[in-house]
Length: 210
Image (cartoon, rainbow, N blue to C red; front, side, top):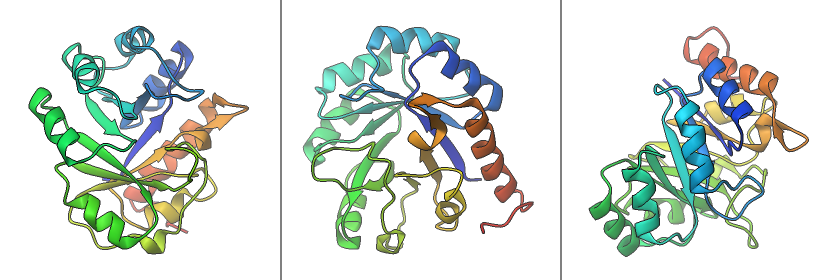
């Protein structure tokens, strides 16, 4: 089954939409972003989220104790590292948390992705590269750069209704959608419903990838 993650939840309305249409994951961004939430806001939103939907915390170069605290307080269920975190950082984090760790790779080459796969993370998240930012560009990258991988991976970067089927053809563990689930910078219930429906229908063989 292909999973879908709706990232960048910021308000109670977003959580209500998620509870209604049931993506497999939601994401709270704790890094600098227009979608950034404080730990206090994330705790409140998580308390409203269906317990069947895991929350992923997105971090960029955050001190390990801060990440571990959000896990121990059950604000998040998975950790997504989207900065310059190296092998030493990941090992220190894993000594503090037992939840799955997702490592984001801003893809520039197949060799780079294969090197990241060797790091002590549970999953990869393959995203677009832009020199001036760590993520959230809303731009798609060249899927031909994805090498055969043993670890499960999410696909991110500019995924929306118009191209999600192309992403699914790469047979990822999951797709990660943020700006593609928004209208005028706010989460759009209709788009989320349709994105979840496309993924579910493709998984069930009721709709082709193209």
